[in-house]
Image 1 (cartoon, rainbow, N blue to C red):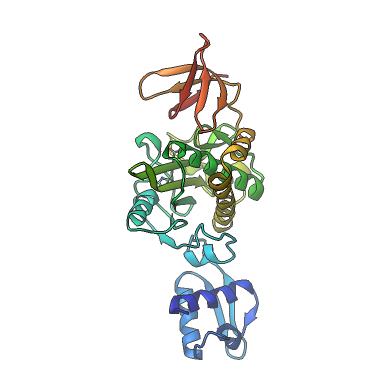
Image 2: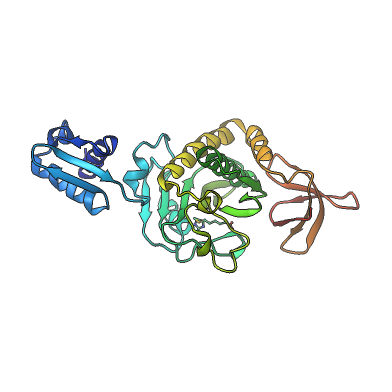
Length: 329
Ligand code: BTN
């Protein structure tokens, strides 16, 4: 086992008995490390922000874990087989986790590589917009995917991610998250989370997909600037309670992996059904702003490729691959 593997194991042993004394012998059992090495590992763990007491004859006592998206924290108790397990890269500050993940993917990073950040200086939203979030207040992460799917169906990954995020939010927090096509998670009409999916192709096949998620977790309402005050929300703003970002991320990754496997191995039908039950868009009158022009009409369906189908007043059906939807009623 590598040095960092041993440190992770020491941390896992302390974490699994948080609030209880653990002897030096218990911490080092089977790891082939000396007393001095054990205490060095504990010192490194404290350096990461964990509060660990030590006392002769008693051993070590973990009393507090840092509220950071550290790889060890995320991996401890994570129940996925690939998402996150292929490697977690943590940034205190970076420009954009999507940019970092793209870089890693270009260097050959495996599927499931996860990039997380406490803060982004140039968080990317759709259509050249920015994603703004205060340091340590939310979840900002990107996953490297290498799906064997037709590039024309890559939009389904955005829809599938939206299902994972919305379902995890509902089950972990009870907040009634809803999906607005294609990639917004709303609560009572305000945006809680956004998803940015970017794809790289080689010939006619998908080389990699980066799916990036921004989710406002513990943002106090006063921290949304004047451009966001009326349109954004956070889990804290909705409930008045703070949430553990690591647990929420673990829940999202678990659901994401299961939805992704269904999408890639079985096809989109059941994911689309789940998407539709989390969305209130079907049957609604909408205006969709397109790159050129706009379409107004009633949403008749989301088709098997995740495309929005709108029927206008003249009865013409429009298949919309990308655009901004405005609800008209
Ligand atoms: C949108 O709603 O327009 C999409 C927002 C996506 C934001 C996330 S934050 C983590 C990841 N890194 C980025 O630069 N963007 C995505």
